[in-house]
Length: 341
Image (cartoon, rainbow, N blue to C red; front, side):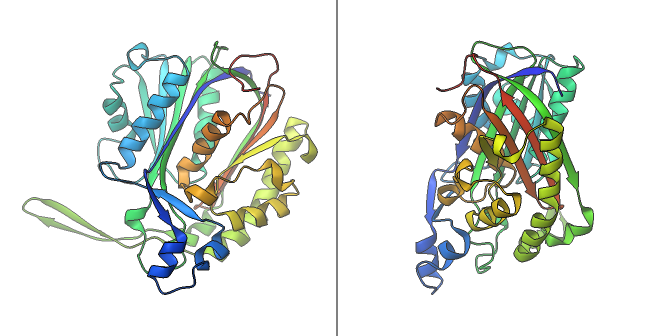
């Protein structure tokens, strides 16, 4: 059992342009419900004019800091920024450093992770370890994604799935007036690298020219049915271990904030896990798959919508390419500020 902490703020940003999967299907000569029937996703949010993976991350972190009662100039080396990104801003410096500079965060420490859907759970554990060992007083966990540039426009298996967004959470060692006081009862994550071939974006080559280097990469290639089979096999045992360590049974969980690959896959996983579907919010139906941003976007949405309440037992769940998966059992303590009643 880990020490008490405060989730003092959350924030998110999603692409401003709405893409209808009905319209997409018609444009590809398919029946109007072709994508919706297969994914459960009606529409997706993608980057509009002037938006990209960096601008979305900036908006999400700014929102999380505001909800924590913090301003960028208040943060120094007592704070660590842990950033997960899928989508290029530069080969160097790391994406988290670019984000910190864009936010005007000059004194805090930064760690960037080249990750996909499950990595925010690993960053959450890193934050907890640093907080519990007094290596920092505060952690800002952020993630951002823009999948659209890496999707083949004719690939029916992927073109109707993905959106663009960013999420962030501020976690502090001590309870704050804005925060949700919480106790992390268990957190675990694991990687099954033997399933790495289930999804990839291959680098095909480099060409050096007088003005720089051009990189040729393939489109995102995904074995969707293989990902479902692997997820159904490896995620339930992981969740069972987390619940056992927390001393909970399935019926003790009030709310599951989960990564959302698509609505249909999530329903398959819910059945395999043995949870009631009604405790899983499903924003993917209107946002699409937001990759590593999904978990933090959905946590922020849940707080904004009043779904997080004192006394709740909350399960965070993320999984994706690698194949990696992770879960955290969190008890929101009663009588604390910051939770919506």
